[in-house]
Length: 326
Image: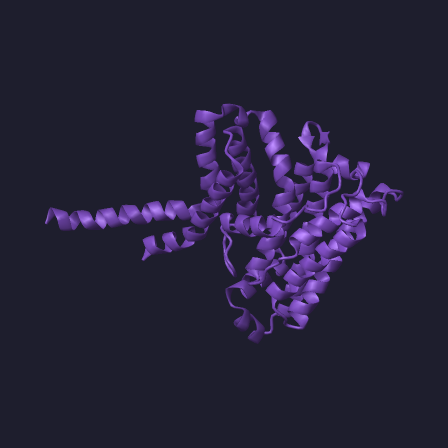
């Protein structure tokens, strides 16, 4: 009799634990684990100086992750983000914009990113082509274009305005972090309070039902891809400013890391409740993890294995939580 009465209590305790786990995206739990390991093995990483460095390094990735999560919430995806990063780096480090006004040096790559997003959105939303095929082709085209224009050689140094965005500080706070977190706050408020945010949630939940109900599915898809292009270009700007020089190999890992970051942030295709907060935490957690492994002198293959395991566990997280509720 005692055993039969204990079983519901155990079941109730498991449900409470599952509910607690579900309150936070996987990225929050990853940060908690990283902080614990750092306290034991590398406490210097937790100093304010190192934390500002980690946040500044996370800003470009944070924009890429937010670009991906917007599209994943709409059941779409963008595999051209790496190409946008590469093109942005080329534009800001070559002689094309070197003699222009600093405002134009920043504005032109952002407009280029929006244009690329608009082209993606046209074929995906209006022509109903596959988002995987369209954005993969776009990313390949952009990479080939940069390699052709640069003749395979890295361009020069980044424009001073771009370096200011990527490296400088205002009142002790990196400008890149201010730009990143400011943009994320605006995006979070837009997704929560504007009609666009409600459209994204409705389309992600059931695109067919949203279309039948007369919701502006095509327009929402198109706007989401334009915003994704803008966020990717902004991330590329911050990364180019942080590196300070041109590269023809930049951005090759942006696509996979952005998808991984969105999953770590608690976003799945068509769903996910945490969105922006989870994405910000995911960017920070991934860069924190890389810095921690570097401090502990992990070899490059070991770094890749650990990152892959973390991403795999994050992908399994929603399924494990749902099983605990069943």
